[in-house]
Length: 231
Image (cartoon, rainbow, N blue to C red):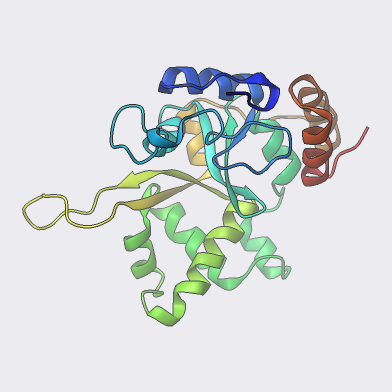
């Protein structure tokens, strides 16, 4: 099977980690023209198989072991960014001002700020608990809650840290797993990743060179637009 940039089909988590390290940015589903995704480097029958070869379970192992940050960082799509690349992506896409100041400046919604503070107080909190804590359990608040999570991920304030299994009073699995979230600074600290001391312009120039080393011309053009960088 011929893939973008001739990537081989991978059957193991270890092989997938090497590809993430090599390409720097790997979306879960096809998103970047001429660039691999976790879906394109694995066989369809691997997904949701419940085996050790299931990429759906890998997606939360990557942030858990510090291999890659995971979240809907742009285009509201799930993206994996390798630990080596993430500080550059954070410097380019992230904000220098804290969420509270951005809210006061009209650059962050009140719902997003409320969600952020609950996550900050309880790193790794799962979606079910989070909705209750921010008072958005009502059906009519679901869209507001979902948009707040997308806003925070797009601003690189939070990342997905994993999933928590829903259990009953006896500790038995009972229902769908729930996504967990943590602040970017907490994930980086746990993973032993240091923020860049470079300016945004310097980080953007470095990131541009990194992209050129792994991207097809089509993918490069797409990602330069997402990161607002150019030659």
